[in-house]
Structures are given as structure tokens and as C-alpha cells.
Image 1: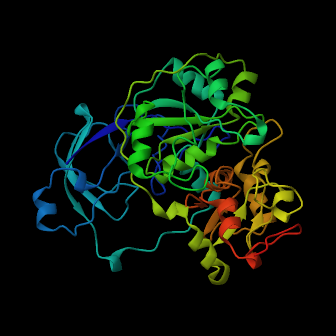
Image 2: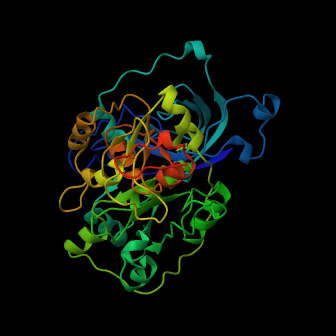
Image 3: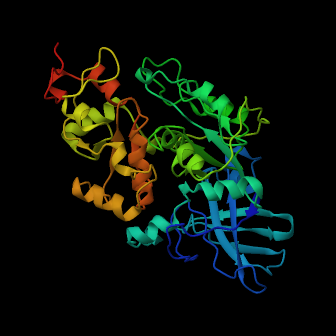
Length: 430
């Protein structure tokens, strides 16, 4: 198979941090060493692969259909800038126990994979433990600043094309029309992402995750391709409200090249950056989606967990809605929480100005709530939107595997037995 490559500049987090380009975590692009552009140094290569089944069968896969294949994700590695076009073996950092044998052709931005080797499971050493502060610097850049976006719009860099999405969404009681607001004012070049429209329209619950084909079709029409670096923001007064939901959706469908604009439109305006008006007219692109089921939990999973206690549950709603003393915004739904869950309101992940808190502050927040980031974690909220702040916060601390209970409190209240509704208020009766 042939896979297009992108030779890209990467950068350490704007809050500081090392530029160690050797120790990479799964799925993360490399952070180029300073001076790597000089002759004789290395260049970072990222390629986005698709399963071999999506390509024409090679003699190897036809002969051995059980041979491991590369999932659709970013594969990253480093090669000498002077590497000749010849057959060679590369062990990608994203797949440290798989060996790619093929021909690297930097001048054509092409790596032709001829063979994929994997050792026996018994030969794979255990993953070394890494400090969370180190890991957080190595994950794909989850936050980008207004300054970074402004420069990316003015001077596009080689590599993934930046696509801006306004993912504003509000609770009905707020009586705001996000699409109308978008047409009045948005970041230049942005398209509007409708969370309600890009959902499972057959579900009785709000904006449930759509299927891969529906998601791919929707974002393709917004001009998002598999080679896009997606930047998501919203226009909420808090600085960030619904954008992390779309960030999580892209990751759930196998697209790691996605970031949240830190501080959203609120901070963009505060820093004096320009805005546009009118409808967007994006050029359709080609996007491939494949659902990562490990990032999504269903009602049955959470129900079984009450007894099994296989994972921790963090609820991102306000303290009053969690305890049952504050009304829910949806008719017919009483407040309360899932047995054993912990409350961390999504606003606790934000500063007073609406920016994301530092990884150190977020890690301390989890510790205060006795949430162990080394163990499985599932996030929930009212309808699956603000729960994604928990996933984003954990991601910034180096934990990239937080799952979302998509049906969230609305589904739980509708389906759970009364004894599984913990509330200081009315609760639920048969």
C-alpha cells in the first residue's frame, strides 16, 4: 500500500515543556528537535494510515489474512533528512512493536509499505511507566491559542490543512440560536458544526453519537478531510462549553489531528482578532471514519459497573444538579446522580477568563476528588456534551483513554431503577 506523508513542524506546549522528540506515546505526532531542519539532522515524518482492508490486497495480506494491520491513525517516526530512496525498516513510535518494511521517498512525500512485521506477544516488553507531566507534552496538541490559529490562517504551514469549526450549542432554556449567531460573527474560514444535526437521529435521546458513515458524510461536507487538522471552538460566555464534545467526536472516529481553541470565540475577540459574517461555503473533502468503541460507554456498561466497579465515573454537571437540589433543564428529568459517581463541574476545568487550566491544576483537581488517572475513567453529564471537558482535562494530563457515557443523565434517569437514582431531591418513583 502507499501512504501519503506529511513532513511537519511540531512544537512544545505554549505553557512550556520539553521538546524531547524520542519518547512518544501511542498516536502522538513527534515534536521536532530544535535545529532539526539543518543538514545531517533528522526530520519528523507523520503519516495517516488506513487498514490494509481498505487498500488492494498485497501478496502478504492475501497469503496471511490474520497478519496485523495498521489502524487508521497517525503513525510517526524520524528519519535522517539525507535518507536515500531505498528499501528500509522503520519502527514507528506510535506502533513500537510493529516493524514497517518499505521504501521511503522523501522527495515524493511517499512511503510505500511492503510488509508489516509483529513479534510474538511474549516478546513484547511491558510498557515503561511515564510521568504524567512528560506524557502530556507528547500527546497530540489538544489546545491551540488564538495567536496560533491567527497565524495558521495567515500563513498555512506544510502538513495538515487547518479546518476551523464553530461547534456552538446551548441548552434550550438559554434561547440562543447558535447557527444564526455564527452567520452574524465567526472566525474567518470557519464552518458551523451542528451537534444536533450530526447525531443519531433515530435515538430518543439528544445528540447521540452518529454512525461512522454518517459522521464522515457530515464532516466531509464541511470541508474536513482525513488530512485536516481540525480546530474546534464555540461562542459560549464561559469560553468553552460544547467544543470539547466535537473534539471527542473526532477522536472517537479515529481522527487524532483535532484541537480545541483555548478560550473560544470569547478569547479570540478579547485578543482583538478579526471576525467574518455570512454563511460558510466549504469545499467538500474526503473523510474516513472508524469508531473507537473504547471511547464510548452505553447504559448497560454503566449499569454493570455499579456492582463490578471496573471504572470510575465523573459527572460534569453543576453541584446542585448532581446532588438533586437544582432542577434539570429538561422537562420530565429530575436531578441526581449515578451511584458511585464523583462530581467535577466542567467549569472547574476553566480559569475565570475562560481558558483551560494548566495540566498541573487539572491533575490537582482530580486528586482532590480522589480520581485516579492511572485507572479507567468514564465521564458523564446531562446529555454527553460537557462530559467531554473531563476527557479533555484528563488528556492534557496524559490520559487519552477517557470514555464518554453518551446517553448521560437523561438516558440514565429514563432507564434506571429508582434505587439507582441518588438524589437529595425528589428522585424517581415507579
